[in-house]
Image (cartoon, rainbow, N blue to C red; front, side):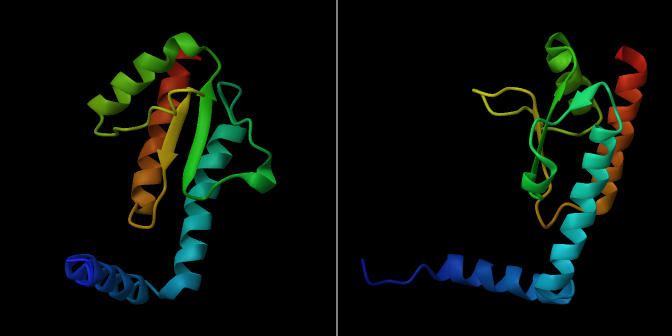
Length: 126
């Protein structure tokens, strides 16, 4: 019925809000997300192998995009990352490259793991 509220969606939203509050609230989550993004962008910026075309002031904290110096290595990067349990890194179908989602539930350990993989991949193919 049109006037029936989406009760399951409301319930799930309530659980998310409780989780966010338990993490320290919005300000704490904002700081945490900024640290995660900075760690990944520092890896990209320190490398000549990875590139980010977005101006530093305009970069997303939720979806970090980057390209490899040789686009021919994209499929290898994705395949090796998937073998390490890191999936869905493929960028947008029109712009290519890679896209790492850094949403709230992604722990810092996940970013550390991606950065470690990226550094190892660069050593092998860079």
